[in-house]
Image 1 (cartoon, rainbow, N blue to C red):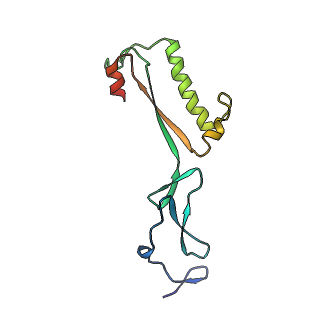
Image 2 (spheres, rainbow, N blue to C red; image 1 turned 90 degrees about the vertical axis):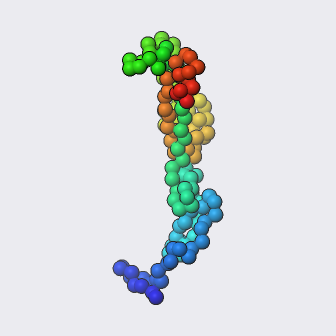
Image 3 (cartoon, rainbow, N blue to C red; image 1 turned 45 degrees about the vertical axis):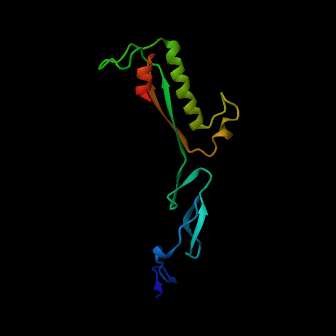
Length: 137
């Protein structure tokens, strides 16, 4: 049975359980007349459960030494020299450049990450021994 919608227009309600699923990479949409359709997500989004488009987010783990012995609890290890800590800063700056789409350091970077919404990073102190490195992973 047709229903008159507030604001005008008449349409028969859809039984969403009778609409076939979209193919992989497509999500459920509705065209201008309200009929169901399947459409691809925009370039900066990815299909999720064939029902919605979500942001493309990269995740990277920065595994590097920050202290001599990170497993020395509760105080942690002794901080390393500025030479080592500058590597940590450089890695975090690289993530920032990806997110800001800047080509200041790496020419063409903007084009390489164009369809990535953002890059998230987690910093893990590996220390200099195998055991903390494996524990951090």
